[in-house]
Length: 177
Image 1 (cartoon, rainbow, N blue to C red):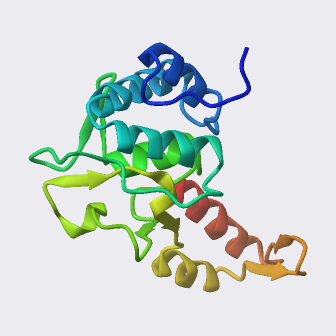
Image 2: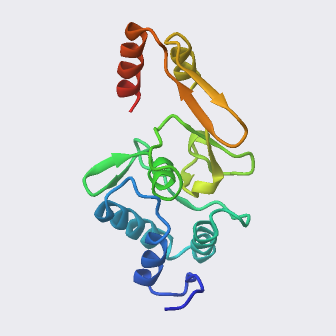
């Protein structure tokens, strides 16, 4: 097997296989494969964008890449394997953050077709988005007594000593995830 990533000129199956090797988990293999196959087929006629996607994914965003666009649907969502979701979120979950929630993405400044710009085409390059924590979640956690400590190398969570607050933390974490 070659160590070189595929290019837009390669067969769809080869490209899909390579991109599958870079997924982060979270979604089952069948869903991931169908989502990637769907994207590769949509990009087959846009060779520069497909090459940009391959570069972004196979280098984990180490090299700058262009927007990778698909047509926006009427409701803004993409259907894959009977499930609907926002396209930029689906692909960001596949290749970057498996536990991502739909409101945790913000586009980077250089992305010209970001989802929230509401253009006819939507950028699904996962390296054109940053993950942000919702301010509402942070404020809710403050009231529970749960605290986050960052030592520079790792972060740890300290639980409150009050059992009533601990119950609130469990409820909040269940609600969030």
